Structure formats: structure tokens, C-alpha cells
Amino acid sequence: QVQLQESGPGLVKPSQTLSLLCSVSGDSISRDGLYWTWIRQRPGKGLEWIGSRYNVGTTYYAPSLRGRLSISHDASTNAFSLVLDSVTAADTAVYYCARGRAYYGSSGYPTTPPFDYWGQGILVTVSS
Amino acid sequence: QSVLTQPPSASATPGQRVTIRCSGSGSNIGSNDVTWYQHVPGKAPRLLIYGNYKRPSGVPDRFFGSKSGTSASLAINGLQLDDEADYYCAAWDDNLNGPVFGGGTKLTV
Image (cartoon, rainbow over all chains, first blue to last red; front, top):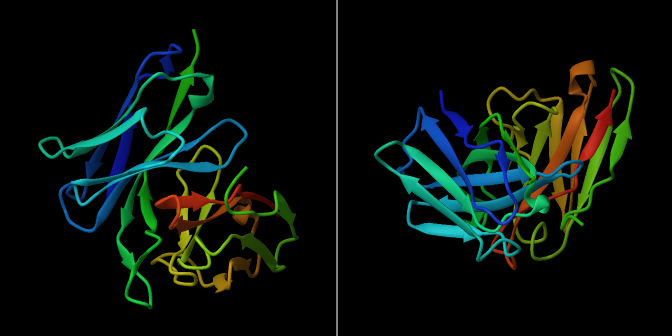
């Protein structure tokens, strides 16, 4: 059974850096065809994709966060991480890590990866 | 403002059928498959539908997904009390080069 678990600080000061870790069990972070992904939910809002690391070497970031965001992996600990610089109150959210599978539609081209396993989420508050 | 548009709320009584609609554009739903998630607040979201209509193992066939053009729908038949949750659609967006979500629909049973 695949399991993901987020960890990190629950409180970060404005302008500082947020670092979160997602520990994975039941699957290998290095296996091809997987999107290791961060998704967040701000208070009172819906789910928001932040970014993904695909096949270890390729990263996709939400345009609104590009420049502040980095997603990396550590094969030795089978975990991947999120680093978000210069946080503001707008970054207060529940952060989820999730596994997405590469999926090819009827056309044979890659299409929306389903996120089939999720962590429980971690609440991060940005406040002084 | 979410890229995909969903009604903010829906309601129905146990045993009834409810349909939740998701509208997008040519760069997302129009050219990519749709996924649907069920999210009970405080819990991890759950994948309900992928590839527009496919159900992962363990998802009952009461949940039915469909897509036409730049819109998609999730139908839930035989509503049960524990179907009460927030439901999100999602699709890859070719312009943003990442998945986009709808704003979510809060279903009250």
C-alpha cells in the first residue's frame, strides 16, 4: 500500500522560506512514470496545484509560484520536498503531497495524470 | 478564480441522483481528460474518476463521469449520507503546463 506523509513547520514568518518534506512508502520515488506532486488548499478555497516532479528529472511549477518554488527529491530517503521562498500570508494553506501516474488517453498522447495517493495534509500558517 | 468552473453547492436527498458540472476551455477539458476527486474536510482527497469516466478500484459504480467538448459531469446515483463532501474536477491545461482544478462543489445530502 502506497503511503505519503507530509512533515514540516506549522508556522513560518513572512518573508522566510517554507520547507516541507513528503516521505513515501510502498513505492519508489525513482520509478518512472510518476508525478510527485504538491497541492494546497488555502482557507475557504479549493484545491490548487503547486508543482510536480516527473520521472525524477523534470519539474513543472504553477506559473504563479515560479521563481519562488523548488521541488526536489531524495532517492536515499525515498522522499521529495517543497521549498517556497519569500512566503506571505497568502501562502497559508493545508499542503498535500500526492502521487500522480502518467496516463495516456485514447489518442495515445499523455493527458491528465490521476492523483491516486495523497498524504493527510499539513497546515502551514504564515504569520509573525 | 479557478480555471475550471463548478457550481459552489449542490444538494439532494438520500437515494436520489445528483449531477455536478465542470466547465473549462479548449486548452484544458477540450484537449485533455478529466479527473474527479472527493474531499471530506480534514481528510485526504480521494480519486473518484480518471480518464473522463474510469473508476479506480474500490470506487462504487454509483459514481459516473462523462465529458463533452469543454465540459464534464460527475453523476452520483443512489446518494448516501457519507457522499456528503466537496467534489473537484481537474484537467491538464496545455497553456499552463500543469493540472488545473475547479473551485469545488459542496454536496449536501
